[in-house]
Length: 371
Ligand code: M6R
Image: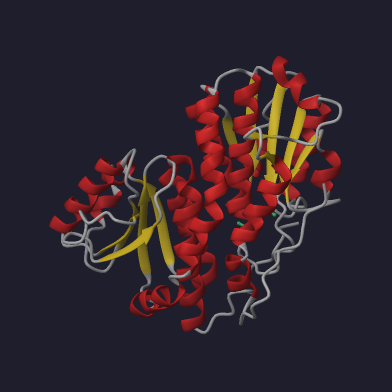
């Protein structure tokens, strides 16, 4: 199915901000394309029932680069949590370098916004030779990935002009959730009650994203406070580790800030030594699963006199006295936290870039597509 256009009519000073604001529409496009609202299930346009053949698969490898790799990591966690399947995940270039062997029982899920990234295409050609099944997730209609895949899911995001991937990232994560639901139904691993709960939450996502977008002016004020920072440590656990990785990349590439990401627990295995006032920490701490550990870390950092910026769930008042700055996002299911939590950071990265005089649509040394 061709990707749809997004409907935003407002004018924006830069494509990056416009594309961040298009996210509710992109999610709606995906809902229209891939969800049967009556039956509350994920549907893929699969006339040959090709996906059903995947029952024979005994190994899953996820491949991506940069932001797409981070979306893949969220997918790996979803497969593990909901299907009990431990998928492997590889950066495309490392996959090639390690000459990893696959076979006809391997499903290779390949994620690429452009569908043109050289490492991805090289890796796809390799696994095709080994007769593996390729499921592509891309925004690139008629791209090489589209043509080389056995089955393709489009991000429905419309053109993404700004260098930084924003709307395509959140759409990739949502597609992964739908693929998880589809396999979950096929393999009877997700109960109908759970499936309906997840689908209902997906349908609520555009509204929740709009609530975050309304914080744009506040986030501009936050950006004004922090834009001179040279260093930032970014922490998160589980799905929030995904957000930490993506936040680090988004801040680096659009603002040139040294933002270094760590898995929350791993931070104590060395990096915590950088505990001076100069290096504030950005911590993803939505309530629910893994919140306790995040809160414990925020308290520990306060004792170490480190400044903390925290992303947590609306209504959570427990961190008011311990965090230096709190940014709130609406409550959602844990698997969708990587979608909601990253949006304030995309907005922050945008405003910091503008305050530093960087064109957020075209930061230095980078190309939209690495070919
Ligand atoms: O088009 P792709 O998703 O294959 O691109 C992969 C990376 O080059 C890309 O995600 C890059 O990290 C972006 N600059 C992220 O904003």
